[in-house]
Image 1 (cartoon, rainbow, N blue to C red):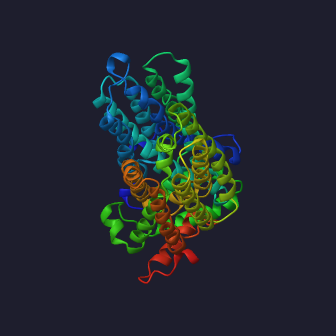
Image 2 (image 1 turned 90 degrees about the vertical axis):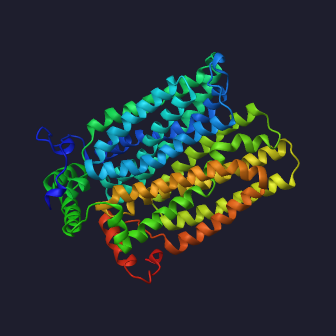
Image 3 (image 1 turned 135 degrees about the vertical axis):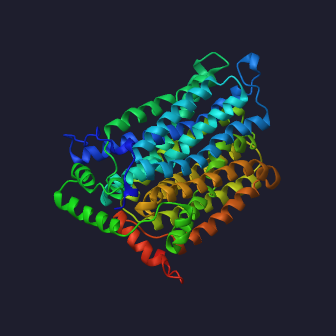
Length: 489
């Protein structure tokens, strides 16, 4: 390895001591996953809490609010999403250059600054700025946490452990919905929204503290030429020396190839990497253009259009979180037993059915209680299949697809594009609903048919392969100008 591979002082100072523990390998890997996914819990809470805080923030300042109007309400909500797009890029570079632990510790600090700053914000401009900082942390966590867990877990456990990231995201959203409801009911004060936002400090603090009790990524250490340290970490994460020898051989073989510095020029200079990045970005389009966040952000608006009252519509939103958590638990069980591609295609097929059904319910039935509950049933059916078959597989593939020497940068770019798609859906959905009415859901259904064809043609199967085997397979398949159907092998 060249001197350019030498890690910075933050990760390689002489005072650093090798990570040691008496914990069994199985328990250590689970501990790493639990601690790292505190970032996902913070991610979920911060994206979910705003739905309950905004109604109180629209009150005039002399009544405890910030006096938000329609424009500034959208600005506060979208500032986090735009920050997340930037954060995913920033964190990917930071994770590759300084290490996964340094990246996650930095993100934890940003989570705490953003949570405290938004809870104390005295004005709209400061609120938007703090939500943007919070978004950087959210986006960074969305790119770094799955990648870190994938590098720590072996092939047999990778699917289940990485999928816990999605479980913690939806659990954070459910926690936010429940905290919003409880605080709104019991805290008899108009500035209750400040308490809602301040709760986000807890998972952020747990992430920062926990990152001091996990080892560095063995693949990042190997990428920096620190093979002895990488082997020492693997010996504590794997159950046998034979398994460690096999994995180290794959890591070292992959490291023998000369690696260019991670940059946009090097990415676009390698045709197979460029094609792989486009597949990753395509998966972000697939995940977000299902319309999932149209339902997560705007379910109350959809239900109110059927005649359901505001209070009932807000309460019904909790069911979104409950179904999402249950569905993700089922998804975690499924991804360990079935291929990524079949799960994605099953999910997309049923998502199309749910959206067509919702369109028919809204078009053919009169606005009454029956229509309200049937519409809610269609939304919950959508979320059941979305969170079972699509969301866990998306985050799992983001942790698996990209080569180790560019994993942080490529994951960051792909996840950034996913956040931009999220922002597009969030921005366009209210206008589409106003102009197209229930036909908006037919539009989503049509897009999801295209997504199904994309998965069928382009998305590879990664189940049962080590990260190095996936890299070798993708390089072989995508180096061909003709690009044989990578999905078939």
